[in-house]
Image (cartoon, rainbow, N blue to C red; front, side):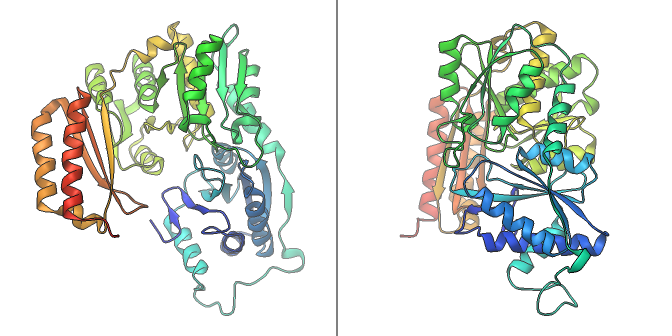
Amino acid sequence: MGKYFGTDGFRGEANVTLTADQAYKVGRYLGWYFSKETVAPRLVLGKDTRLSSYTLEYAIAAGLAASGASVYMMHVTTTPSVAYIARTDGFDCGIMISASHNPFYDNGIKLINGRGEKMDGEIIEGIERYLDGELPAGISGDLPFAAGTAMGKIVDYFSGRNRYVGYLISLGMYSFRDLRVALDCANGAAWSIAKNVFEALGAKTYVINAEPNGLNINKDAGSTHIEGLQKFVREHEVDIGFAYDGDADRCLCVDEKGRVLTGDHILLLYAKYMKERGKLVTNTVVTTVMSNFGLYKAFDEAGIGYVKTAVGDKYVYEYMREHACRLGGEQSGHIIFSKYATTGDGILTSLKVMEVLLARKKKASQLYDELEVYPQTLVNVVVKDRKAALSHPSVQAAIAEAEEALGTEGRVLVRESGTEPLVRVMVEAKEQETCDRFAEGIASCIRAASPREE
């Protein structure tokens, strides 16, 4: 990770750690970079519903056009829609303004290449140097401005979003007629898309948290606050519910009994569905180290292979691309279906869950019951030095003791946070008490090895 850009873009508190000036400079650099690579470059730009997204949108657009790139503005839309349009409509780059599941006062800039994938390191490294005042070799003063006919255009591109909606509808293999579906749009980017897709496929939809005001994105809503959808599903007796996050690149489900189907549930049910039909190419599902231990037990029983990557859908997709895997994702609901998309796509994920439901002629609760979720305890320990704390002999001894005691009936994961002064301790086992005991034992050793700075 760089100084500004992490695994999912440049993220921070709007106009505090991510300012309009920085957004303008990101646009200036990208416009200059693609102008030297391509005559009249075209970039597509989207945003979520945060109050600050408007400021950042116009700052980036101004920087791009000033450097000679034309900007096609999709306005409020989802991250996966920008990725889809970038690759299908021949754009040089896609930009999404969103802080995903974070509260409204945060925002972010996600960069997507012309293939619809997360942007590579070379361009991001150049942007970071420019943000710190360092110019590319051979340039003095500042990046050159475009003038006259070389200036970029700024174009409304609602048609791109409409084309994406049409693409999602085209993927519906079954009619949703007579099915009652609840959609929690998190007051975010899905609010103007999800309902249209589900109703076009025949579902009776019940939409909640679809009144964005710039301040309520993800507030007690969506995939990170799914208790509201659980309550709604139970009270209104619908067949299934789907919850998205602010930019709709993740999805969690709620069955008709109000129980949550996590990303792990979705990976298992769709992997088994693909395997039954001979469509699970390489017979491998790509997960991250945070997937539940029960998922791997279920994969073993189903004869399905799996790999584990670092946390982040970026790493999941990189492995999928390099090894031709069709299915991968995270427990949090970032699911990637590589035949259909290059990123996690919450609405696409919900359509794929509906496909399995209808193909198997099962209720959502029967899909839930296919995975035995192991109890899990997660403890975050604030430390002065993450590496020193993690490598301390007493900490390593505590980890080894827990691993030996759990054997093949649980696991221990202790890792550094990539963004905060924390060491994260996660223990999974058959009993909650066992998880709590070992997690707290390891956490106590970490606290003793690296006391928190006062």
